[in-house]
Length: 296
Image 1 (cartoon, one colour):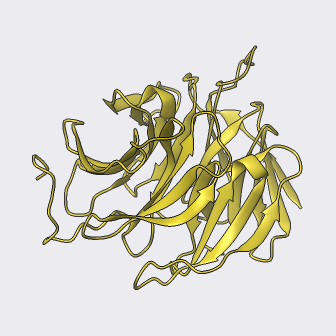
Image 2 (image 1 turned 30 degrees about the vertical axis):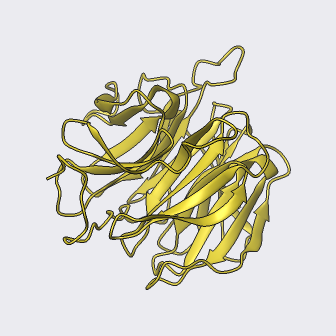
């Protein structure tokens, strides 16, 4: 098993850094509870640059194909399109309903160009979360229900396999997905974390799963059979998000919940690894889809 040590790549310390993605042009990430979308500077030693800020939590984004400057976002209690000025145009707010107070969490576009985003209760009510699928026409549909803290998802390159963590229960499940319809099949348990919680994930070019393990200061690479292959050690307790920019593994961390954060908690880390990743897919909105007003 290969082990790596990582050091922070910039001065920022985020409250809840997650949703980090390589778009093929730049790295973007979020500070969820502050509602901020950020990007890295050309010089990795410089501070992160804010692209936009929302008055609600911002869980994750994906670029929208053919619409430069437009993002689809898991935000607040639902899913919206963010225009070039950062104004949200809501597709749906399914978590704006009676029950525990909810917010959106992690999300990503799959290789077929759909967007997937999870929700969770602020008080982590058991089973209150849902993974939603956003189809090309903008329809938002529940895909996996009864999750407590959904993180990921992460998809294989062919879009036929989805990994989804339920962080509250320390488990990552693997789901079959029909790449044509987006329908999700019955899951199987892929891995269980005994210490800490599985958080953000990404799949590399060999089909292995990189998983940030909150509470342990590690990011772990698991082969397709679930076996542990590589471990990255961080001087930060709460790794939360991961992405691959070629053979550079980027990791976000968090200070939220720490009584006395260490000097590197909340930092962004970068470490070279052997197997590359690919850019996050864009969300593909059908030209005929009814688009909320103001989005070009």
